[in-house]
Length: 234
Image 1 (cartoon, one colour):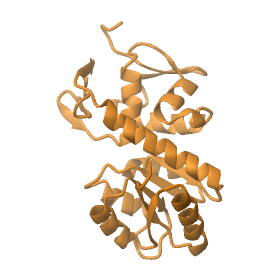
Image 2: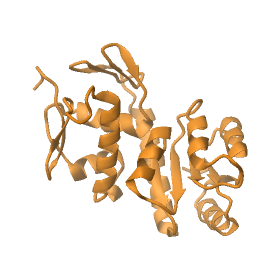
Image 3: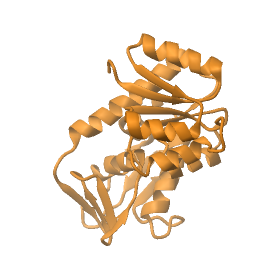
Image 4: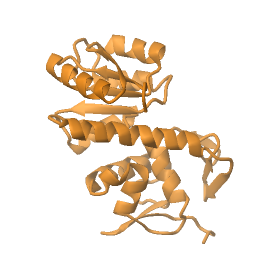
């Protein structure tokens, strides 16, 4: 991970200094700004491997809007820094393409763990890109292109949404345990974040199900886990 660039977007000087010191001491390059507009420009020009993004910024563009605009041209992993961690905030972040959240205040250990975990997942996805296709009813997953369609209509998924669907699709008609999914998609350090998984499943259903309230693909096994139901497949 040496020399990987991280774009830090936050307007709190003390937090910027702390994050800068922790990350640079570990071998990362840090580019910092407190401006949402400047963050978008730096994301395009510098092409960082990761963005750490606060919600409240110095100008009239908040973190959600920064993430939305960055997603128009980049699939770079984004970790949102927030003092709030309610489900509504998570869903809003997922909607604009945020991959993870860190709730303030956080320790240096937690920061490094989250950064390393998300970069590891991003690198694994790039290395594991494989040829092949998965069909589940109306859903079609092109593994090489990381493209999902339903009845031929393209469905836009964020990196993490795709990874969750991919993990379920690799085990059709098989219930995957909560901690199994959390470990496979986010990493072993997330295995107890059940609310996180539930929020992502709920949002993924909104994108792939015709009736999210009565899902036909992502089926809940109460208290156990989730399954991708694919008729005609074992």
